[in-house]
Image 1 (cartoon, rainbow, N blue to C red):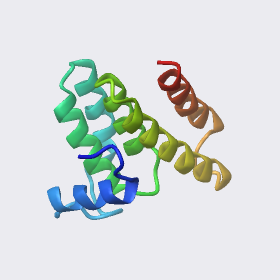
Image 2 (spheres, rainbow, N blue to C red):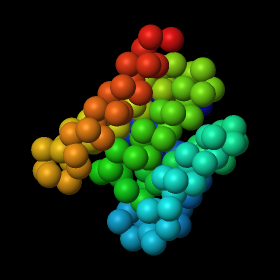
Image 3 (cartoon, rainbow, N blue to C red):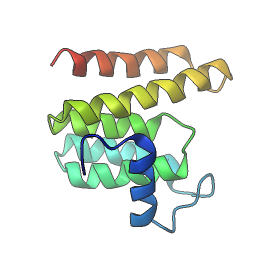
Length: 120
Protein backbone atom coordinates (compact mmCIF):
# COMPACT_ATOMS: atom_id res chain seq x y z
CA UNK A 1 0.00 0.00 0.00
CA UNK A 2 1.37 3.38 -0.98
CA UNK A 3 1.67 6.24 1.46
CA UNK A 4 -0.18 8.45 -1.01
CA UNK A 5 -3.32 6.31 -0.59
CA UNK A 6 -6.18 8.29 0.87
CA UNK A 7 -8.90 7.17 3.27
CA UNK A 8 -11.46 6.36 0.56
CA UNK A 9 -8.93 4.19 -1.31
CA UNK A 10 -8.07 2.39 1.92
CA UNK A 11 -11.74 1.76 2.76
CA UNK A 12 -12.37 0.42 -0.74
CA UNK A 13 -9.43 -1.95 -0.33
CA UNK A 14 -10.85 -3.06 3.04
CA UNK A 15 -14.24 -3.74 1.43
CA UNK A 16 -12.56 -6.08 -1.03
CA UNK A 17 -10.81 -7.91 1.83
CA UNK A 18 -13.96 -8.13 3.96
CA UNK A 19 -16.93 -8.21 1.55
CA UNK A 20 -19.29 -9.64 4.15
CA UNK A 21 -19.00 -6.71 6.58
CA UNK A 22 -22.05 -4.48 6.23
CA UNK A 23 -22.25 -0.95 7.62
CA UNK A 24 -24.43 -0.62 10.72
CA UNK A 25 -25.47 -4.31 10.58
CA UNK A 26 -22.72 -6.13 12.49
CA UNK A 27 -23.34 -7.50 15.96
CA UNK A 28 -19.68 -7.97 16.91
CA UNK A 29 -18.53 -4.42 16.17
CA UNK A 30 -18.92 -3.34 19.80
CA UNK A 31 -16.33 -5.98 20.74
CA UNK A 32 -13.91 -5.12 17.93
CA UNK A 33 -12.57 -1.95 19.59
CA UNK A 34 -11.49 -3.85 22.71
CA UNK A 35 -10.19 -6.80 20.69
CA UNK A 36 -8.09 -4.45 18.57
CA UNK A 37 -6.64 -2.74 21.64
CA UNK A 38 -5.85 -6.13 23.17
CA UNK A 39 -4.01 -7.10 19.98
CA UNK A 40 -1.97 -3.88 20.11
CA UNK A 41 -1.05 -4.58 23.75
CA UNK A 42 0.02 -8.11 22.74
CA UNK A 43 2.04 -6.58 19.87
CA UNK A 44 -0.04 -8.51 17.32
CA UNK A 45 -0.33 -5.57 14.97
CA UNK A 46 -1.56 -7.60 11.99
CA UNK A 47 -4.54 -8.89 13.98
CA UNK A 48 -5.17 -5.39 15.37
CA UNK A 49 -5.16 -3.91 11.89
CA UNK A 50 -7.63 -6.50 10.58
CA UNK A 51 -9.92 -5.93 13.56
CA UNK A 52 -9.91 -2.16 13.12
CA UNK A 53 -10.47 -2.51 9.36
CA UNK A 54 -13.65 -4.46 10.11
CA UNK A 55 -14.68 -1.80 12.61
CA UNK A 56 -14.19 0.96 10.02
CA UNK A 57 -16.39 -0.96 7.59
CA UNK A 58 -19.06 -1.74 10.20
CA UNK A 59 -19.14 1.78 11.69
CA UNK A 60 -17.94 4.16 8.96
CA UNK A 61 -19.27 7.26 10.73
CA UNK A 62 -17.58 6.43 14.06
CA UNK A 63 -14.08 7.42 15.09
CA UNK A 64 -13.02 4.17 16.82
CA UNK A 65 -11.88 2.17 13.80
CA UNK A 66 -9.88 5.08 12.39
CA UNK A 67 -8.38 5.83 15.80
CA UNK A 68 -7.41 2.17 16.16
CA UNK A 69 -5.75 2.11 12.74
CA UNK A 70 -3.86 5.26 13.68
CA UNK A 71 -2.57 3.53 16.81
CA UNK A 72 -1.52 0.47 14.78
CA UNK A 73 0.44 2.59 12.33
CA UNK A 74 1.98 4.60 15.16
CA UNK A 75 3.31 1.33 16.62
CA UNK A 76 4.64 0.39 13.19
CA UNK A 77 6.43 3.76 13.04
CA UNK A 78 4.48 4.73 9.89
CA UNK A 79 3.91 8.35 10.80
CA UNK A 80 2.13 9.31 7.55
CA UNK A 81 -0.54 6.62 7.85
CA UNK A 82 -0.90 7.13 11.60
CA UNK A 83 -1.49 10.84 11.02
CA UNK A 84 -3.95 10.18 8.18
CA UNK A 85 -6.10 7.82 10.25
CA UNK A 86 -5.96 9.92 13.40
CA UNK A 87 -7.00 13.03 11.48
CA UNK A 88 -9.95 11.07 10.07
CA UNK A 89 -10.80 9.86 13.58
CA UNK A 90 -10.77 13.45 14.85
CA UNK A 91 -13.06 14.52 12.02
CA UNK A 92 -15.51 11.73 12.85
CA UNK A 93 -15.28 12.45 16.58
CA UNK A 94 -15.93 16.16 16.11
CA UNK A 95 -19.09 15.33 14.13
CA UNK A 96 -20.21 12.96 16.86
CA UNK A 97 -19.57 15.56 19.58
CA UNK A 98 -21.52 18.13 17.57
CA UNK A 99 -24.42 15.67 17.22
CA UNK A 100 -24.33 14.84 20.95
CA UNK A 101 -23.26 11.23 20.31
CA UNK A 102 -19.82 11.49 21.96
CA UNK A 103 -18.28 13.28 24.92
CA UNK A 104 -15.75 15.96 24.01
CA UNK A 105 -13.19 14.20 26.23
CA UNK A 106 -13.06 11.28 23.78
CA UNK A 107 -12.29 13.63 20.90
CA UNK A 108 -9.60 15.23 23.07
CA UNK A 109 -7.99 11.81 23.66
CA UNK A 110 -7.82 11.24 19.91
CA UNK A 111 -6.23 14.69 19.46
CA UNK A 112 -3.68 13.70 22.11
CA UNK A 113 -2.89 10.58 20.06
CA UNK A 114 -2.29 12.75 16.99
CA UNK A 115 -0.15 15.21 18.97
CA UNK A 116 1.99 12.31 20.18
CA UNK A 117 2.46 11.05 16.59
CA UNK A 118 3.34 14.50 15.30
CA UNK A 119 6.06 14.88 17.96
CA UNK A 120 7.78 11.65 16.87
